[in-house]
Image (cartoon, rainbow, N blue to C red; front, side, top):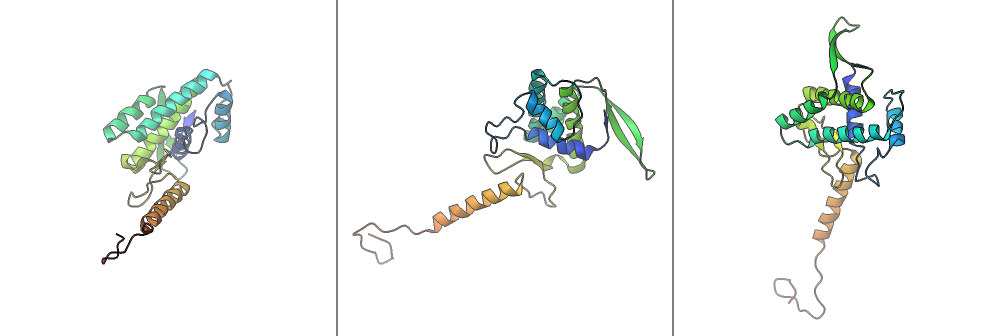
Length: 202
């Protein structure tokens, strides 16, 4: 398998990480079995011709959880250690790649005999490695709109994005607005109470 489109690998890494979704999915696990894994592979056009097994689905979930922990890490050093642990699960061969405009790039070759879970895991790990090099570790974030835990990459100019999607941002803003409205409603005086000179009820 030839890996040179690292933006595509980053995109798939985010989609894989977010297959654990306690906010929008019930149950939160989206890769429940081989059929669900096959559907995920078809949807994102990750080629795999062999039979997908229960063990494949289990190991893909394990690699997904390890990739999520890269986002959850509190320091750049911890992110690097966790990501490198996934990058070591299968051998990759770096190769020079000539481009049509006369420039050169580096691609990676994953052996075609590599089992599906390891192939998918290392492909997504290469995507995250590219994202870290391109954006820096501070831009790998988890959605701030509880209970959503969607992983995303903050591409905002000033590193201010806090939510994985506009839906979550709108939901949190609406909740904050309702809370402000509740605080602004004056408390009604109890029946029979007399107003004080300062306007409060006695």
